Length: 317
Image: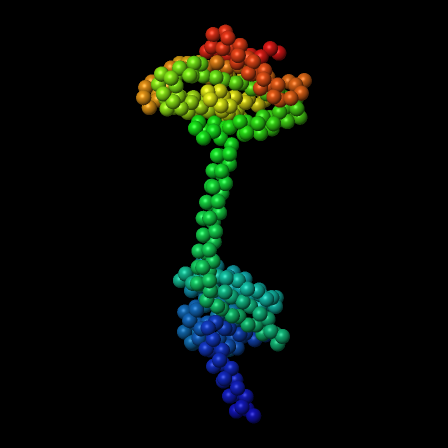
């Protein structure tokens, strides 16, 4: 009977030694009961370094001192790795080894009080997952950029980069809602390039486009971060000034007018000077429709042009 049991035990040990996973079995008193060759190879251990009868703690300490667990205090590393055994916990985790391989480690308590550790080489799986994650991140980034680009195309003027009428309407709605909620006025200005048709007729439409692009660049450079500039069409633009009184907006726009008039505009063909006329209006709590602010600024723009152009006019309060 004893020979039969020994034979069966030998068959089991042979089978466990031939599996692709590393296997370490400890008794209830934390003594090594079995360790297969695959386990030893995973950790670069000689057969005499892990034998039946060795204490589990001594095996873990040997690995810790050889750096198998990375940087750290070996005693603390061993203590951490003994906790699942002591607490009878089941766990599984992936750990990257010093040589770049990845092992999946599982710990399973036995009813007898012992503990089984299995070690599976999952390097290829982790690499595939890392590659897949990288691909997903790259595609997500590309998708985010595409969405941002689509949003930009949907909300900006393709020639000048200024906001388009649709985005202006959205922003105007937001600014008006804030004004009504907090009782803080905002102002709005409409500007138009003086005699722009002459620019196109004299220098060509490309020169006219160059002027529009450069004008928007200069406006963006000078307005505040909270302000915005949108193209209404042709050579007409609208400036939105949140939390700004009519007097403050008049000062801001007069500064813009002076800067535009004082500096030449370079086109692909020539250098030329332009001027702008600006109409400014302020929102008030008595205004029922925000479009009334736009209409008031437009009327003020008309007054500026009628008065000789190259000037700022404000809507009557």
